[in-house]
Image (cartoon, rainbow, N blue to C red):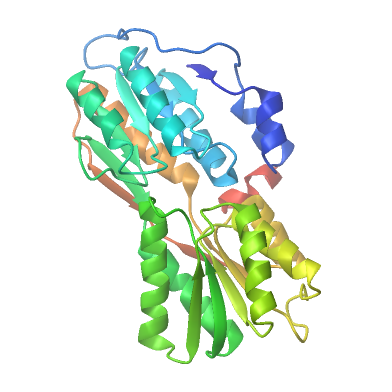
Length: 341
């Protein structure tokens, strides 16, 4: 397997808060990148085929783990995998997809930052007869052969149940949200607020458009607590934003450990390594975990099946699991991957 990245080890490590092993694993080969023209192995074989993978953004631990799952599956099949960092920037990502199409890979895999904006790139790939596969955030137009996601709505509902239980089913809570153009964020929001309305009428939800970003969460949570110091808890659409939540609570003297009087309950989503560490040290109560390794493996399995002319399920899905202090050390959690011996 050949892997070429549009990021260097140094720049990736600088942007991310990752265990060293994860950061290093991303950069097998760095330098100039591009897509070879369509070639590959024998008819009906995946070996030697080129797959262009435009990521959501490698500043997120979860996305890095997803790349690891994809790389593993690609190596097993002998694919040439070309990874480009979308950097969480929807406009940049569209440009990257359009550029990838001009290089004619044998397949294109995209994890859209903004589903609507990426339509232009998907349609261009359709015109070039390049098979497209999508992760997490399906575009409303354009054709793609395979799709895999996480049950985001169920994840939001699970977060609501855990938060409600821990605050005693009454009070004001905050929801730090992902981006408006993200299908994941919209479904997590729907699952969360619908469950709150359905089961917990004494809980008031105040949603903050924090756009997946920890700095945004820090500023907006700080403002929210300034206006109402009696907020009981926070549900975050990802664990990355919990960094900002924790920093805000620390600044105003409200970062109290789990189990102590005055503790503000925090439930995140993703199950990142840093989230698991926060659960261990008592600054975060729980995380709704995903399995990015499995998700990456599923979609690469679909691409391989396509190359080999075999049938595959065009719609794959992974399910949420609640992570608390009781199971935080489970070695099967992806966030513990760097701790495996």
